[in-house]
Image (cartoon, rainbow, N blue to C red; front, side, top):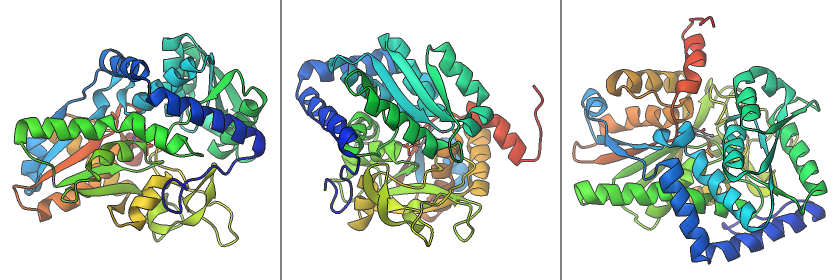
Length: 391
Ligand SMILES: *Cc1c(COP(=O)(O)O)cnc(C)c1O
């Protein structure tokens, strides 16, 4: 497998053929300078890269320890890191002569990102979404429709993400020659975890170059939240070869890892198979996949990208978990000290930094990957804090 005993292509025959086709096209594309040039051009002119690396002096002062820097992925077009990946995959689809993108979405963030690049490239777009999620996320559903996407409402089973994945895969299997399946995180069968990492590693490369330019040194710590693991692997990858840089992934502990309501896959998962890959998975005693929970829709995933399982197994990356309460406290603290409203996902990484930074020397540099902005989360934070907004 690609990552020690993690990764692989655990999909049925028909889909395996399509995955192999993506693998071949991807490998050719990455060797083609004109493909990479077009990708870089879009990152610069459409996404707005490089994203800023900002020293959070007031937060640093408040915590009293290591200097904290924020990698501002929240400033990207569409407000998060996801655009880096969907853009790369859409360009690959275009190169393969495919004119339709298909994706599943839970809370709708990946669906909106995919619908965005479909509009940009003039492609058709079909987003599969569980009926329960459609109900909860009406704004994102409407956003996708405005962008020209068809939203397929999935009524099977629990009517959430898992059923949406199955539904999208069935549709893909029936349209293999005309449709590209666009995965939203560093998960799924090979080559997707590697492909998504390659489209996200620009984050870590920029952090390294930006710190080199202003501080002439490497960071001591890089922190990122982990759902499927795409923003984290993107932030970490360029530092893996630098052993002095400590890398920490922060997953969602929900109500606590000692309760049933969490999404702490690295902390409590076992090796298993999910979405076509072997990786760590949250499993019940009978071997079925656990239902997961987090305040953050982007982090409530029962699996994790296989490269993270591998990096943990070789002790290169440390994985910890932050609760809903800790994430909300971090959300409020960053908002109040820096005037930056972070995504609730990213707030999990901020939450661990709040614990870690005061224990470190003042000369240390700690970079938090701020994976997205928090405008989308304001209503939910208000509810968590016991206030109801009327609109
Ligand atoms: C989707 C999302 C995440 C989680 O996905 P990863 O693949 O783990 O990065 C984190 N932060 C934001 C802002 C997101 O939208």
